[in-house]
Every structure is written in structure tokens, then in C-alpha cells.
Image (cartoon, rainbow, N blue to C red; front, side, top):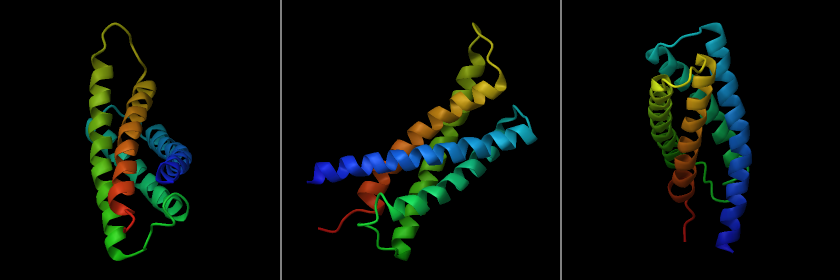
Length: 145
């Protein structure tokens, strides 16, 4: 029963994650369209803004679907959710900037900045999302026995 619930949660979390990814990428790319840059500080700011919009979206949908049976809507739960979001944001920013550094150092092929940004963002989204799921499942929305 627990394995089935976990599989269902992973499917729901992944579906919501696809929506989150779209929101995250759209916000990032709108910011880059308005203010194109290769400046790492601006890229970190843009990644942070897009991620914060994504976090709000994630909280909204995951508390209504993925973890609705476990949520308590307490201040502690909300605090834990935003703590995990902060950890995931740090992971996202580290992977995003590291990914850009790796892609920029590739001397055998020239990749347009737009493509570099989106490849690095994809890696950042994947790793921060995986950590976010584990944190939400086993800490934020952990079922009381």
C-alpha cells in the first residue's frame, strides 16, 4: 500500500513538476528576452526570480493534490516547506551556474547563450526537483504514524 501511494505521489509530483518546469522556463526566458545577459550575478537573480514563482506554484498544487492527505496547513509545515524550497533554490542556483561554466568551457562546439541557459536550467530543475520531492515526502508532509 505504501509503495503504491509513493508511486502515485511520484506521478502527481512529476505532473505538477512539468507545469512548474514550464512556469520556471517561461519566467526565466522572458527575463532573458527583456534583459539578455551573460553576467552570472544577473543570471542568478533571474534564476532566483523564476524559481520563486515556481515555488509558489509548487506549493499551491502539491498541497492540493500530491500531499493533500498529509498536509496539516500549520505554520510549522509552511516553514518546513519554505525551508526545503530554500535548500532547493540553493541547489538550483549552484547547478545552474556550474552548468553554465561547463557549457562555456566547451571549446569543441559553440553553443548560443540562449541554448546554454536552457540546458543549464534543465539540469538545475532536475536536481532541485528531485531533492525537493524527497524533502517534501520525508520531512515537510511526513505522515504521523
